[in-house]
Image (cartoon, rainbow, N blue to C red; front, side, top):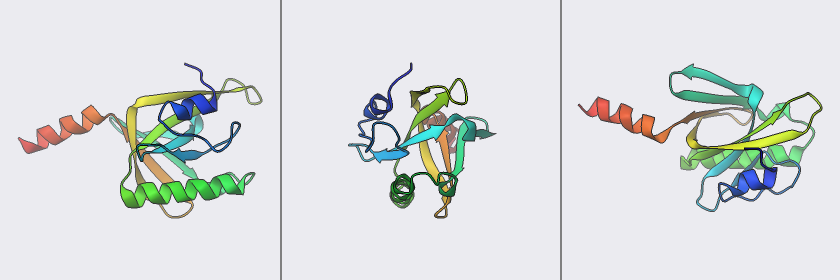
Length: 135
């Protein structure tokens, strides 16, 4: 479903600070909401969707990078869940569309002040792996 940026963040109970651009926000339930660009996803393992990027990549809006850094630090230190909003374009200069992935929950794997890695998984897959290990 194509949503506006505001509606995509609102789906997770967060309010972006701008109608046009926002990399992250904190939701009312304490989760971090991350605006992801489709091109930075990878699959390092079965059942894991990895998002890897750098704050220094986006130099056009330093305030956005500062807020994202604060949110990543909060999520890493507080082990907060991360919710995914995905931005995509059909053409290089075409309009942006946004959609959400409520079925995936992320966790900060690495954040060194610039480079960050978020691994997204389905909650039921984590429970299944834990149940197998307990046997």
